[in-house]
Length: 527
Image 1 (cartoon, rainbow, N blue to C red):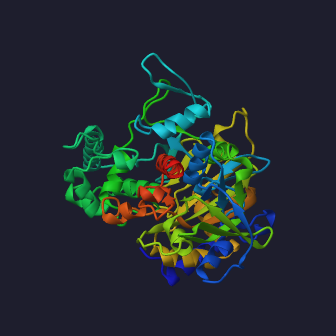
Image 2 (image 1 turned 90 degrees about the vertical axis):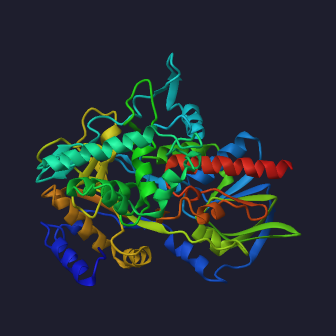
């Protein structure tokens, strides 16, 4: 439901009355720390940057330092090719960015990778290279580093006044609720094992390995809510859970994402391991920032941060990439043979000359990291890695210290996730940017005070990051329509690499797109 002005004012007024929130504001430090909106928004101006002050020659330019761009760079380095990677933010990582303080490292976005499927060959190779996979058993199953497998307890849900293990609501269920639970999850298991008439898995990772059988792709024409209606899955607890899962993975609920994407969330994963169950995930205190750093280390000084690519053009004279160095306050021209654009399409559309437009929707997010001087308390199941609040507009929080090897923690960092999906994306972005740091503190503290009375008194530092275009939103018709196919088409000597090309923003898709783009660039260079 859109957040009306009246409802917004009522929410913030209630937050202001949360115990101690306004009075205790001086007890913590912090600010809105990202993203680099000012630099990014300069791209909206046709003449917002000075002419290039100097020219450099380089073989390949990579635009964007998220997982796709970093994977492309990693592949090029291993092939012995020269390149420069341009990243708008102060450091690479994209939505896998992370931070660190005296208490813990912590994520600013993506914070885990499920066990990769066998077909996710690029990801499996990276995990083995980085030591996450330490070997294989006699059956060939990967053995994962035990310190990277998410420790117990993994998940809990605040429901009916208490914390309960797991994320599916279990308290107060009727017999009909339980019947629908069984029906829903049985159908997801059936689809997980099903292959189409083309012999492909119905729902695979990477997405492009999925079956093109219309029996499955037709689900992309409806939203997830319509599928739930059609199947008679009307249970309120079940619908809340499915909506939560869609908001968690896509930044939007069942009314806004395609049924194919919604089913893919549940039916695509069949990763296996010698020392973990299929439901296990890989995680680190800094989330996927650990993987981003490993990828970035191989590129070293080839990465230029605070570099705003603002003009990319090619003609008979060659390919030119102009970028603005925010530290030196000057523009630089790179003359290259090929470019990999690993930035999202809304950025590419503004910087690449004569690039055909393709409509793409993005979900805005807010992520906050709160440093506490004590672990949060609460009735019921103990503190877990992922802690979700039923019926909250947020997705709850992840405890960054959960994976720490220290035996006892008195302090912790909570990473609080909030998809801004209660109104259209553009309106949500504008509202998010108009809110002050204090506004965000009020909203987040109010959410946490519901389940941790008095937590305000224990906050010592509180930072906020706004992701205006946090991830691609797989609206109905996008994944199996022609828009996604058009995103992947090269533009002269410019190839594209971003998870949005898959329609789903997960690590496996971004890494695969980066590797594919590097292969295309290498083919162009050796042609």
